[in-house]
Every structure is written in structure tokens, then in C-alpha cells.
Amino acid sequence: MRRYCLVGQVDPQRIDVYKKAHEAVWPELLRTLKESGWRNYSLFLSPDGMLIGYVESEDLDEAQAKVAATEINTKWQKEMSKLFATEGAPDEAWRRLELVFNLEDQLAAL
Image (cartoon, rainbow, N blue to C red; front, side):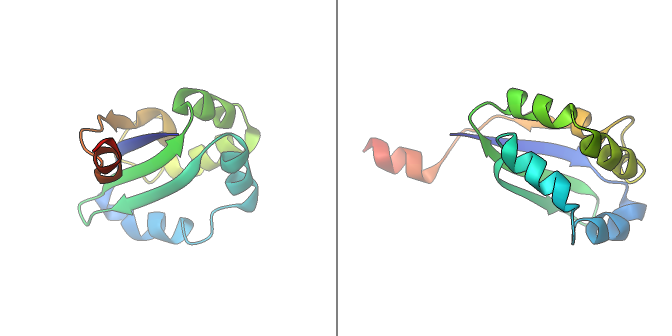
């Protein structure tokens, strides 16, 4: 399982709405993410709107493509796009960060 870190930017004026939406993500979308290969998915939000996503997946490109092909994701992205400081669907605006250190990996290599 590979680890991925994603960075996005929520509109700082819409943070409260974004947080409220994520208190109860639509069950169909949750199931779609799981069935598409997303594991241990978490989001972290700073007060200035910087959004950090962490997810584990065998192949995130494939997992993202599976989710993107669903009607429920299209609806969710349409709603979420109103809350981001970027153009278009938020799930297409993620920047990926390179993993440079993991404690467990290095301990296992000893």
C-alpha cells in the first residue's frame, strides 16, 4: 500500500461551510471511495484554508479515476467547488507531495 499526501486550498471565507459538509459526507460517496481503493483517507485543514489530504492506496491514479467516473462524485465535486480557492473540481486540483520519510519504513529496514 502506497502513502499519498495531497494539498489543496479551501477559500478561507468558506472554511466553516467546508467543515460542516465534512461532518457527514454522503454515505454513497464514502462507500464509493472505499470500493475504489481509498484507504485511511484523512483531511487536515489550517485556519488559512490550506487543506492536506492523506490517503493510502495501491494506485491512487486508478482509485481517483474510479471515483471520478461516478455520478455521486460529480455531484459532490460540484458542491465542493464553491468552497475552494481554485478553479474546477477540487479533486482535480490536488497537488501531490513527495514522501521523504516514514518512521516505520526506516525502522523496518534496520
